[in-house]
Each structure stands twice: as structure tokens, then as C-alpha cells.
Length: 138
Length: 185
Image (cartoon, rainbow over all chains, first blue to last red; front, side, top):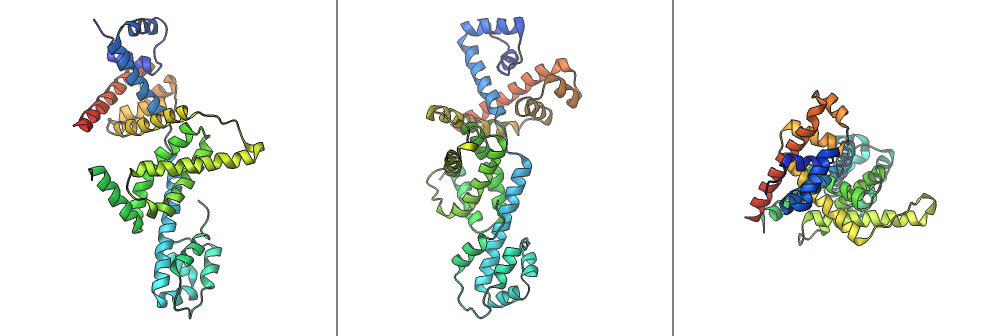
């Protein structure tokens, strides 16, 4: 049995055939299992290619938000483990945040100013949770 | 442990160690999957699908430590995306003035999920095609451009668009077949 040309099947699956050409292809598909299988594979592929991809600007925005969170976590870790750094952060929170490439939002700066300079033990997880809430929403 | 599993495990370890590049890789790798789920499986309009994607990635960041590696990372992220999407639908039903009819059967959702899975595979194969093929398939299927637009913007005759699309689909199918065969080995 002669089979349909694969390009014809691909065109049909993508909805590119019309009129007599389409009718001829349909007539053949009705009688040929091999071509029907190929046609089904192309239909699935066409459907798959039609699923939209996430918009680039959205992906870039999410990446930047996650980067900010990663940096803030590192910043907090240092804050908890390094008293000298903590004192420095209190003196000038904005500069400290910028050194870690974190956007110094007013809420974040205010929260850092509130830290006690004599506090020897800082609960890292509590601080992390508290400060993370001050990040701008995603 | 398979190659994919050990590669995923390493990516997770790097993310947990606050490696910015690893987070970039993770987001790039799974963004289309989550977005596709939101659009196809839950039928969210594009703006809301973007919000589902953002919220899902925020939760992945917060909870990655809980990932045990017993299933694939994609499946784990998929569960989070489903929860985020369902939560959004529930909150809509509490605000009926902003809700719209949403009734999709489990079978339809499963079908949509399979379409998204296939889309990820097809997109990976698409990346292996030469640029003119990638471009024409993307314009026709993803951007839904018409022949005239494609011909004008790609500088080709309108009469050759269909045959070129078909040739590129055939090439794509060969790549997918090759991938299937090597996957079965």
C-alpha cells in the first residue's frame, strides 16, 4: 500500500490542508493504520508546541526576587554569626544592604535599625522569618 | 541513582547552599512547566498563570528543604503548583463577583497534564533544531501567526510557509524519535 507523504501528514495535523488535498488525506487515513499513527503523532506534537511558554519578563522578575531572598538569607546568616558586622549594619543599614546587593526598602532598613547592638545571642530562624516578611511581595 | 536523579540532587543541594546560579537554573528549567500547568490544566488566563508561577516559585524557595528526593523534582514542584492553583480557585469562590465558571474533570486535567509533559519534551527537541525551523514553528504554533505574517516577517514567499512548516515538523519528529529510542536503550 502506498502511504501518504510525511510532509502531507504533518501539514494536515497542523491544520494546513484545505479543500481537495484535505479530503484526499482524510480518505487515505480512513483506510491506513500506519498513516493514522503518524498523523496522531503529529497531532500530539502540534498540540505540544501550542502550549504557551512562560513570558521572559516574568521569569526574569522571579529570578531577581529569588536572588534578593538568597542574598538576604546570606546577609542574615552573617548578621547572626558576626557581632562586628551586626554593629556595622546598625550604624548604616543601607550601605550594608547595598554591599550585599539587596535593595534597601524602608521596612528592611527600619527593622535592621531596631536590632539591639548588645544582643549576644540572636535567634537566626526568627530573625530570618521576621526580615523575610519585609521583602517586597513576589 | 540515575543520571537525572543525581543531577537533580546536586541542583537541590546547591540551591540549599544559597547558590544564586543554581536558583537561576531551577527557575529556568521549571518555569514553563508550571506556567503550562496553570494555563492548560487550570485554564487560568495568562496574567493569573503568571501569578501562579510566581507564587509557586516563592513556595519552592521557602520549602525546598522539605524535598526528600523520593520522586522527581518536577513532580514535587508540580504538586506545589497544583496546590497554589487550587488555593487561588478556592479564594475566587469566596469572592463570587470575581469568579468564573471552572469545571474541569480529573480526566480532562490528566489530559492537560500529559499535554504539558509532552510540551516540555517537544520544546527540548525544538531547541535542537536549526534556527529557521525553530522560528517558523514558534511563530505558527506558539504565537499563532498567520501565513502572511510569517512570510512577511521571515522574508519568505507565502507559498513556501506550509511546506517549510511541514519539513520542520518532520525534522522535529525525527529528533523526538531519536530521543525516544535512546531513552529506551
